[in-house]
Image (tube, rainbow, N blue to C red; front, side):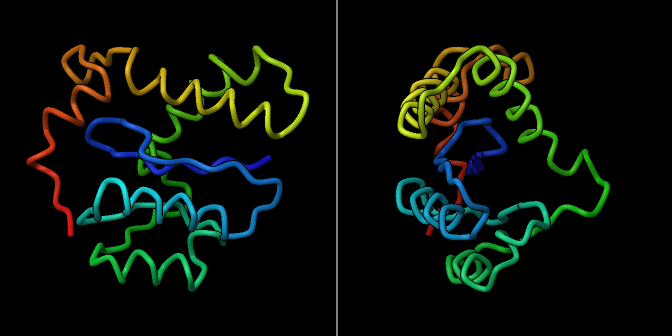
Amino acid sequence: MYLVVILDWHSRKVLSWRISKTLEAGFCLDALEEAFRNHGHPEIFNTDQGSQFTSVAFVKTVEDSGARMSMDGRGRCHDNIFIERLWRSVKYEFLYLHAFENGAVLRQGMRTWFEWNNREPVHQSLEYATSDEVYQRDEPLRVTA
């Protein structure tokens, strides 16, 4: 299974996510469109250079929103450090601790975990606030279209 997350870098809040059994761009595009619909459009949208993120449909959706596209350089692990930290947390705090009967059970578990992750753990780098608290507190700072 493949997981995509649309993450607000400032607050570390998971804005949307999708799971797919294939690595086609459609599930990534669905997550992107949900994030834009529910949270507005960013000034800059950053991804890695995976084929799902360089697809014509994905790039066009980002550009049509008015956001500038930024892609991590090859071998530049610090370019995407926030999402890499989230992947580590998802794996060690959730996925490796549970067995899932099927994709539906996995999706429900992921939904519950992401909701918890946005509202419960505090982050030292966010002055010991949760992602939800920082996202709500700093809402006027975000650029939306």
